[in-house]
Length: 267
Length: 273
Image (tube, rainbow over all chains, first blue to last red; front, top):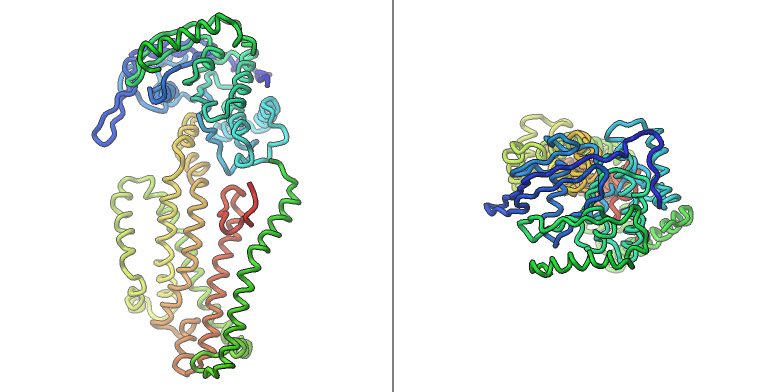
């Protein structure tokens, strides 16, 4: 699965993300839950950044804040150098569940961003078919999501996130709900995607190997209220090859992060 | 996974037939038993007329039945139509406006404790003996289930779908029409099916109170004249009308909704994925 960039433009250039002293407190029934406690983060344009942390630590909250879907309690998020005041519209999101619309077939689901944004349909359909082909869903264009396997649905969701050539791709544990083999396949496919693509990716995960394998930078988070424990730079060339998991240096980085989790009582 | 659609359709029809056969046989069995009992025990026709007698009367008085059926049909159809047209926007208002949710919705729920049938005499006082009071009773009874189901359906939209739409820059109207209304469709249609049966009840009750036509009126007349077979014949027509309403709604559902949104209890032959 090699996702070719759209033939047309430079839209696949990424944006920078700059998060400073970000705080988020949820209030529910009088209780307040502090999800994020002073997060500072800088992601370079075109970088693949993973946020790695235990479940329930506030990783997803961070993604929602970067998308502009939540308003932070404190601090600021800058995307492409501008502070977010509303949702950031030039992004594609892949959630943990596919969030496909069950009443639309594969093609119409992939075309959803074009429909919502009012993009010209002939060009969008061409791009959608190209993406569907590249993620291996050719022949399933007319199928409804309920007729697809979990992996196929998530591929469809990925195609939808890429249709409008967003400068930012947000992925919230996108492979978390898949079986082990499908997950590994999808990780390799996503790594391949990096070969021809320069958009910024923010990837939320709780899988250490997955984070190190895919990312240029891994941001390790603590338990809630989340703070950043460490930022690990991963200097392997992109795209990552499947052989990387046999590299001793890969294992050294993974072990270091695992030790970090042990020291902080997460493991 | 991908299955030959032609083959699939055939299987669906086949399994639908298989599902229906036992019910139809039971239905026929009951009537045969009924016929035998009336003959064997010599049940008088004014207590329980045999199915054959009822059918005879229905054929004999078919024009009379048709004439009165049309009236009841019109009353319930207008009442149901009115309730569909008004209840769905009401449901949307309740979901989107905190004011409506806090003011109107509790009243609407509380109003369900009122036996709406008891409104019939008052409506007759206000609107006379014509079509209007029956249409209004049908409307009042049919309104509530659709409102409630619309509210429930709209509220159950997965939040991720709304997040997705917002991140794409969708307007609230786009989110309503493209996602929330679609997600609510199975609920709304379930509400309309309940409402369809209620609407017929409302029309008949209205006719019991004050009417010069309609199946409810015909039942009263048959009762007064001691024409018991006609009374039963009217009941048969009413049952058929109720069933027809239900399946008409189910048919519309099949025609306008994409396959994954249809009520599987009614349309799916039990097969499928």
